[in-house]
Length: 111
Image (cartoon, rainbow, N blue to C red; front, side, top):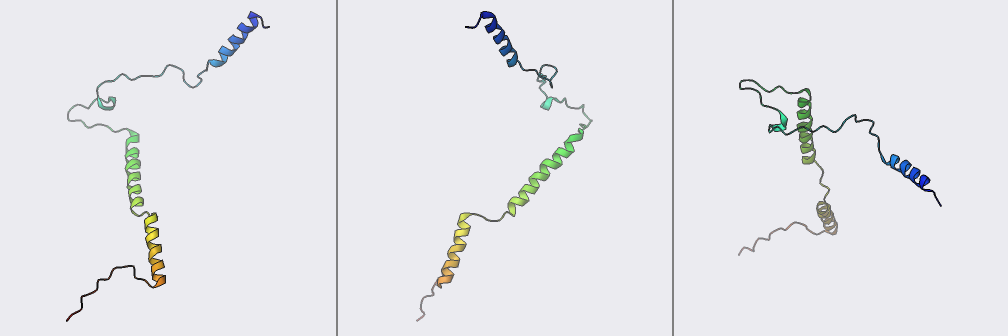
């Protein structure tokens, strides 16, 4: 049977393995206190314009450019639905049998 010192040593070794060292973070997480301003940015005094940060133009171009590109691609996307394929297949089979697939109204006989 194990002695109490061996059990205590095993618990100390096991508990030290459970403690994780955080090598990349050097301090506690930072918390920005809410200020009541939108995005924490105080509005400029009257008569002055807000100065954009360097990354903002690239973000706007990337975001809205991607949305415009996606819109164009969705507009010109090929039709791959099952219904379209089935309609085309039915038309081809009816033409092969000599049947008409469009309704043609018959004019009443003139007397």
